[in-house]
Each structure stands twice: as structure tokens, then as C-alpha cells.
Image 1 (spheres, chains in turn blue, green, purple, orange):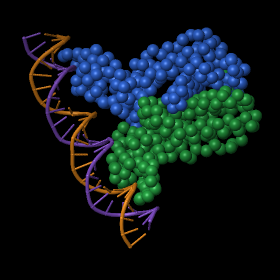
Image 2: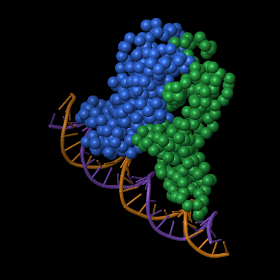
Image 3: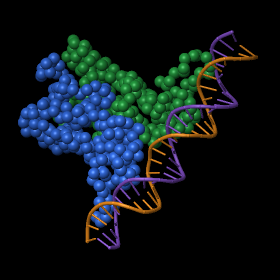
Image 4: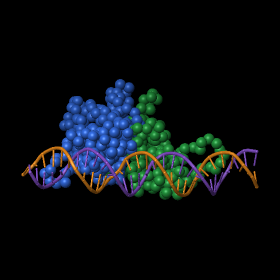
Length: 212
Length: 212
DNA sequence: CGCTTTCGCTACGAGTCGTAGCGTAATGGC
DNA sequence: GCCATTACGCTACGACTCGTAGCGAAAGCG
């Protein structure tokens, strides 16, 4: 999602291959150098394009990394595993797999940090990264209500609040586990998360992972 | 927690006032400039010390900001409000108040992002920031078990896993709500979080905020 | 074929980095 | 009180990155 051409349609079109090469080079540089040591000149060299070409398409490091990281989340899907608990576990494990990649780890948190002082950047993150994740929560909840696993919510405002809350809890928990606690969000941990989510803390933690 | 003097105890001691001034100047610069535009030269000028003095005490920007942000979390306390739900709400609201400050918003996520490529930095964050937060979960859980609000857990390994999980869920949810969704973690939201945490998603969401 | 836009390249001033060197100030040991 | 030791403020330095400008060449569209 780089800057569009000024207006007209005449003249030499921008190379789509350059876009892909630049984004791939950005992810590669994120893996090798991390956020703070990543320079746009280095990315341009890796991508085999001139630095000026890069600046014509992206306003700066923030926007470039957002787009490079956003592509990692394209593969997120909502599987139908038959019941809500299994659906949650499936999505969370996909999300954890993406956060396991070093380019996502260093890139995502860095742009979120920058977005605290840049509303436009925050909106860009919301549209290209967060919105797709949240849609999965919305669909999963609707599917669970159709199955009768969750009570229906007639008030649309209450429903929106509930989706927002669930989204922040699930995504926040996985991110915190992966990046702050720095421990793997593996199947056992995801089972525990799902149990808390569905039954609350009061439920006994059976050693088999099943319900109390 | 800056670098200690080489070894000896003779000679001019380091100014404790300089430490405090530098950390305060770092927070001030975080508010005004954010993480990426914060420079150590600027911090030194604000603190009224020479740039070389700053470099003698901290290895770099990362370590400095960790220490500056860590002081913000010193005020976290576990209030005794009589029941688990109220205790959770009290702590979460304190945590949310800290994350509402701009120096915490931009500083915390930035150092977490950098820590993904720097194990020593991650350990520094864990000791000076995360450990204090997690202790509150540990104490709150023990208190709730003593009250009979939570079932006791005889296996210490299971108990540790449970505390880790709760911590990641609560802290992650608040951070995600505040920094990614960029909406306030106010009393209403915290009530919803507490209800999910204690009773799970299946519970009806009463409009009065009380239990189903 | 001409018009338009992109592309690669080079060069530039500005700013930051982290370090070194120097003279001075503040301690503790004798 | 004197001296060794350490911290401090200041200046200066080479190296690096930034973002932009200017140029000639290349690639499409009508």
C-alpha cells in the first residue's frame, strides 16, 4: 500500500516487482538488524533499487515496516473445527505462529510504539493489520452463537463492546506471552487460555486439560 | 540502576542527583519527542549534565529508557477491597492509569520491541518492570484462595503456570486495549474484563454490570 | 513519435552517534 | 593538610544516516 502516483495515468508505470522486493527486503533486514538498526538505505540496497525510489513510495520507516509486517498476517484464517473451544485454539495457534517469526516480533511492537505519537500511523496499523484479526473474532462469535454455544446479544452496541473486549483479551494475551514473557504460546498454553476464556478462573484446572 | 563504578570506593562519588535528573529528563523527552526522535545528547542537555556523564552510567538508549520507565511502575499496589473482583478492578485501573501517561506508552513498547533482539535487555525489563507486576497477581491469587473465592492448587508447577497465564491475560489485555485499540481502559471496560476473567464468555452480559 | 513518469546514480548539508582528550571538582586514605 | 583516585563539564572528532535535489536514461501511453 505505498503512495499512489500523483494523479495521471500516462508515463512509465511503477514496477510492481520493486514493491514486492522492497517489502521482502524490509522483512529480511528486520530479521538481521532489528528495528533500530534498520536503515532505508540498506533496505534499498537489499531490494536492488535506488534509495530515491523507496522514498517516492513510502513516507518513512514507520509506514514501510507497517506494510512489510502486514503481509505476514494475510494468512490468518478461521477454521471450522466444530466447537468454539477448538476454533479459538486454531486461530490463536496461527496467530502465535506469526508472532514466532523474528520480523513480526521486532517490527510489530516497534510500529505500535511509534503509533502512540502518530495518529495517522495508528490508523494505518488498524486498517492493514488489526482489522483483519478482529474480523476473525466477529465471525467466530457469530458462528458460536449459531451453534448455541454463546448466548445471543440483541443490543448491537453491547455486542460491539463484547467483541472489542474479547479481541483485546485474546490478542493481548498472545502478544504479551510471546514478546514480554518471552515464552512459547504452545498448545498446552493455548488450552489453558481457552479454558479461562470460556469458563473463567473459578474452573478447576484438570491435569488432562478437559473441563472440570 | 545505572552502571556501577568500576570497583574501588576511593575518589569522587557519583552524583545521585544527576541520576534522578537524567531519568526525569528522559521521561520528559519521551513525552515531547517519542522514542525514535529521542537523542541522548538532548537528554543530557535537559538534565543539565554532560553527554559523557550519561554514557558513563548507561550503555545506550535502551537501558536508559528501561530505567526511566521502570520508575513509573513503582506506585503499583494491591489494594484489599474485600473480594477478588474488586481487587482485580483496583489493580487493573492503576495499571491503566500508568499506561495512560505518554512517557509509558511510547517508552514501554519501544524497549519491548528492542528486547526481541537483545536477551540482556529483556532480562533487565523482566527484573525492573515485569516482576513487580507479576507479584501482584501472585499475592492477589493467594488472597482469593484464602477467602475461598478460588480453588486451591496443590501442585506448585500447575500453580506457577496458572499465575503466568493470568498475568499474560490481564496485562496483555490492558496493554492491547490501551496501545493497539487506543481506547481507554475505563471502569466500564475493566468491569467487563473482570467478569470474563471470573465467569468466562458464557455468562450473560447484564446491562447493570452485575453477575448474570 | 513525443509526452509523461519512473528509475538509477551521485552529491549534498544537516544531524546524531559514541569516543577521546583535557582541565577541574570532590572525595577517601595517610 | 596532602595526594591518589574518581567523577564531571567541555570541546572536538570521524563515521554514519537522513531526506532531498539534480541529472540522463528507460519505459509506457496516445
